[in-house]
Length: 157
Image (cartoon, rainbow, N blue to C red):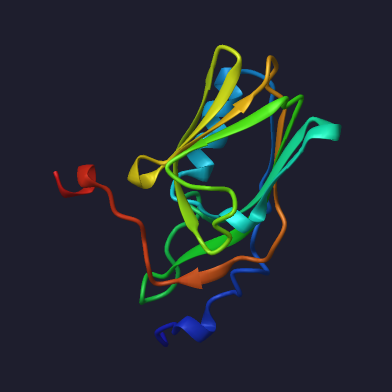
């Protein structure tokens, strides 16, 4: 039997199931947080629309739910859109929203009374002020392979 090469593998995009999630409570938001872990978010891809009480961002999401591809073990990333409704304000720590070239790495997203907190690497953070969790996440692009897999201190134990 012939050995399969990477070229013999199905195209990642052809076999991809696009993620589409909604969060309405802290437990739902914890699921979204898990899918967003290690997502890369350009500051330029975040916008607060105060008249609509909506905060939207586009993230370059690491697809933890997908096994590595082929002999080289490449993982995948995809573009993902996330919208939060009923947001009345946005506060940031450690970066400026005018730093359009800056890229943040998501560590976690969590709910606290009156807010949703984004925790980024490097002690950066963002607080979405809201009295209600109403979040929609949807993959908006086709996955692409990446040889870089995020590592965490716990991976070395």
